Length: 423
Image (cartoon, rainbow, N blue to C red; front, side):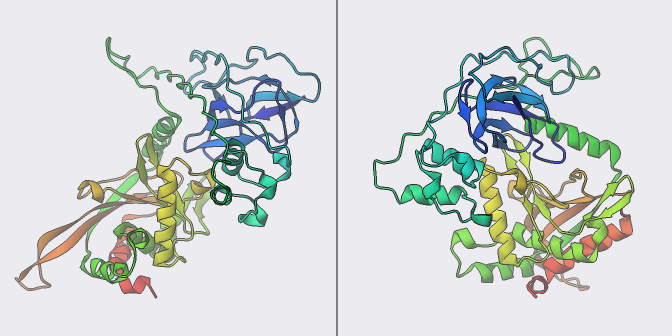
């Protein structure tokens, strides 16, 4: 008898929700084969079995929440077992007194496995395996372009595109996810008013609540705002984008992310984390970019933002934002951020303060670029200029106002002299 447990998909993940089971009790599961879809605080992802055997028991039904490391299913090599009631109550979001979720009556069986090659014998991402399974593709016939020959989503898409018309198997309709358990209100919170509608918190919203409350209560924030003249940045952007297609063009946010990456090299304390032993200076500069979704806020990470070219930052940002909006971000896209950029300029916001994302030291809030009258130099002449307000929120345990001012001043210098970012 072997146990399948809830995996830890991020350093701050404490539990996950079972969205649906891809296998039913009595099915044989190969090592490395996807068995269930789980929702974490950041992504929905398939989990794989680490052993081969018959799925003998589903402990956590679809819709239930289980703590990291908790048993969600069991497999055996013996005779097919009859599914029994869950032996462990799903973990509640806030307190163990939450009512358990009723088990799902039935789960649609997964598509028939490809006979030629077992899923466990082929290196492939969970998404690639799911696509191959749903479209009846043999993974053994697909060349992988990922690390060490791993088959990724694009490889399966290419294989599908190259097949004769009519050979693609129909897509298996997914089981509708069961609504998550409504969280138990903390004693200090008021009860819902009679006749009102209460919307249960999603895993993402619950995590935003927990982490940002923790940040606000434990990290002493201070704020510094500066106005940046974006005339030179807009001129350079126009020149760079002129020969490019719309999909290739760089954005103002790309330039800000690049400026932050360069400035963090000179001010490593703003790229640090507060730990029990002291101040941890992070070895890499990985800038998280806040992306607003209907379900909440995610912050995929542009790794090594200091050493990427401006074009490289732009391409990676577009790729990550596209994955976020398609709901296809992986855990690897969301981990390791050391600094965050949050831009609300597209909504007409001129200036705002942001809450630091733990365990980071700082976050930069970016407002809209607005054309306003300003004095020219030291003269009394008034000219029009494109001004953008940027605000740094920083952890006073790690850095001080003077260093924060110098850091945001370096970002201002880079944006007002953008050619220096290209050298």
